[in-house]
Amino acid sequence: AQSVTQLGSHVSVSEGALVLLRCNYSSSVPPYLFWYVQYPNQGLQLLLKYTSAATLVKGINGFEAEFKKSETSFHLTKPSAHMSDAAEYFCAVTRRGTGGFKTIFGAGTRLFVKA
Amino acid sequence: EAQVTQNPRYLITVTGKKLTVTCSQNMNHEYMSWYRQDPGLGLRQIYYSMNVEVTDKGDVPEGYKVSRKEKRNFPLILESPSPNQTSLYFCASSLGQGSTDTQYFGPGTRLTVL
Image (tube, each protein chain N blue to C red):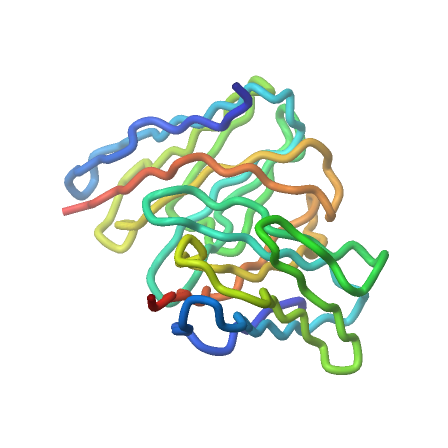
């Protein structure tokens, strides 16, 4: 069954530094992978998604992620962190259920950005 | 404005008192879903619906019911709430029924069961 693991429940970076949030998936079939962001007291919004086209996916707000099948990873990066990037980030994968497609989320990584 | 709305946003109730959390979307989306968010566990899917009158269990359906009588609405029903259902609940919708669709989330409902 598909699942996702996010390494590190908390990540702290300085403003201007590289952001790297890790996500590994387990899947017996080619996965569809997503990164969502949750700002304080808000719902989730999509950052980017991999749907088996290009392996390097660019998203909103300068984020990108690379699908690496050999490493079963889909890490999220941003070259230069901004204070407004402070939020919780969730990696997710979809899998087929009996009545359609289910979504499996990772436990989340909270990003702190220091001035 | 395209959006997913949930009501109420905050609710405190007591064990065993039936409650309903409403969810509505104005984007004519086929797919709707309910999640609960708990610290350290991320979001877990409770139920989802591919279309009117078509629903299926997610990973944590116990203690919950749903119905999809209209395309725009997908209420979550707790017939007999218990303290372990204290959580932050999100409704979401997406345009298609496939596995690659972006989900649009509501603002959340924080439920406390005493």
